[in-house]
Image 1 (cartoon, one colour):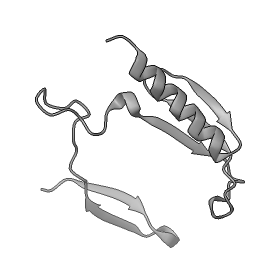
Image 2 (tube, helix red, strand yellow):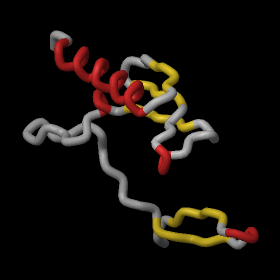
Image 3 (cartoon, helix red, strand yellow):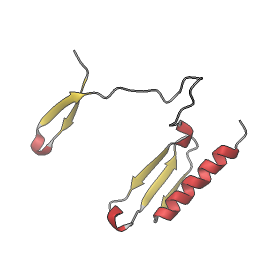
Image 4 (cartoon, one colour):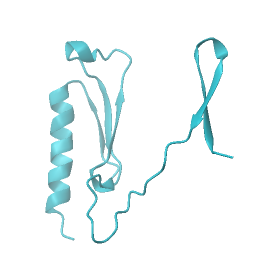
Length: 93
């Protein structure tokens, strides 16, 4: 039997769909990962965010280091990401 994922649709109806194929965050040694966990961030947007108007408010966290901050503008969000990625690149291996 094929694995399925269950989710709710409007009015309480249930639907089933195949579970997407999983992939590993650890790349084979001979192929560096285009999506590395060291460049993974979680962005949470507050309810009053209006992306269409450029109003972004929320919290961002770097998954590996745990560094986090609140932001009230796209520029602040991008500055945080740039700072963390720069520090990751400069960190001795």
